[in-house]
Picture 1 (cartoon, rainbow, N blue to C red):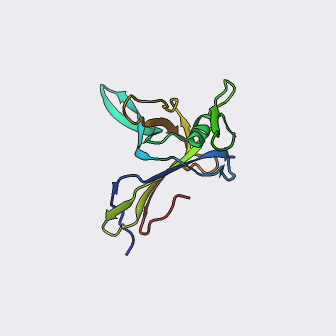
Picture 2 (picture 1 turned 135 degrees about the horizontal axis):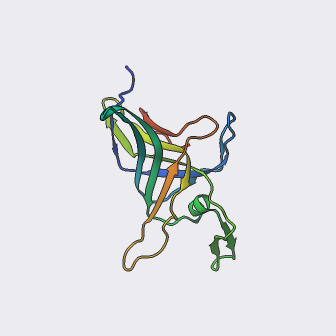
Picture 3 (picture 1 turned 90 degrees about the vertical axis):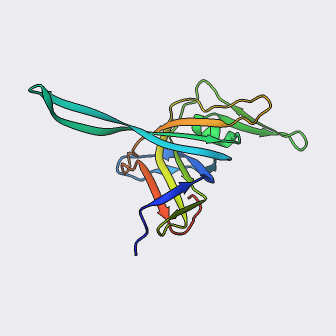
Length: 187
């Protein structure tokens, strides 16, 4: 019996990003090292559809809809310099020795935004026969807003990232949703 095509998606326990390092048309896309996005709180994948209507004789004759944009928004709870570097660019310099170590992230005016892969998963899934997990993957994303950073008075600060996804040039893959009978790590 094949795996059910229906499942619940409860919670998010892991998400990772990786810089897209090459995406040649007709070739193979390559990525940098997967980097953890720590303290995942939520993932929202949405999109926009453009609809054009053909009107004539004082009536609607036809309509055509095209998926124009896939959007991604995620919120996480722990600031990660490694994740920010993948999302925005910049450099991280580690210096010093215990007890005076530092990790400094610097963004220059000459740094540019790059494409990245995003993948996330549920802790468990449930459906007719889905007991493993549900995973989402967007193959090629780029920011649409600067990732939030900062502090909050007498509270934890959470961080939000907004991006759009594009189809890869190498194979036109845009998004993947996977129901897995057995849980697996994000790879």
